[in-house]
Length: 337
Image (cartoon, rainbow, N blue to C red; front, side, top):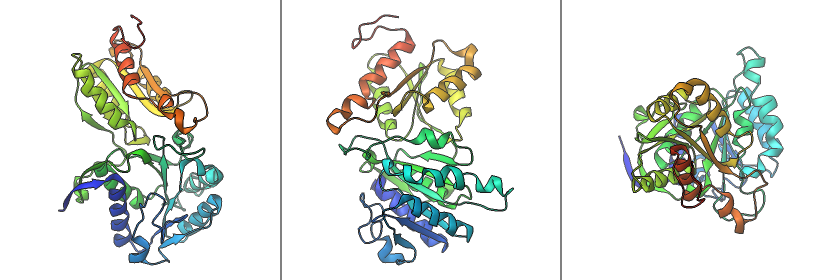
């Protein structure tokens, strides 16, 4: 067992990919500038040097072509790991992912497997230009046949990328780009890793369940800490898996607290927050003490970098939602339940 401290989330993914390449000669990495450059976020830094150009491959700037090549490799027994350089670049590959990758196992009655991992840096918070800060996860969570996951800390980043690459199902792996430089301890022992499709209770509480994933888990933890000063106990749940959703963990938490707040950076309409709120209402209606609340991005295209702080859900908006489900007056809005 090896425990490393002070590892960045990006570095944890790098080490996870290194383990995957070492463990299975059929694992290949593909993407734009992932070889000599090591990717724009340097997540694949040093891997081409150590494993060669036939296993860590620089590809043309053509996402549909990259995904089509990955499908062909999967047919031949390989385990491609595709990097989409930025979230907004995934749309040219959308047809390949939802019409081919997601359906071939079902269409072939189990004969064909698509063990493809699609790595996507996603979300805002880094001041990027247009098409470089998106949250497209709901498109893929809506698509049957895909697993969709998102890590929120270095330890999960390391374990989950290794599990994704080893999985026989196609996995869309969303990486919170503004958390790439978050540091933490990383245990390499996969025997300690929870299942890829399980949520986790990050911090226990009794008054409100606050559900988040990816980049907003850290914000949710800040909100839980701030709420303590106001006498509230907030339980933070990190979803980890967006499809399938671990409703068992979320339900158990809501049955205990009686209140639910769901947070994500993506727009509200048709987002994962709506699915979680509706499903929890169906399953836990008798235990709910207040309607669920959503804290999300606005229903607009992602704004220019100078406005993204207004678009992204932050600490104040989360605390406002906590106050609303508690039926308390909020100092920001001045409303009273």
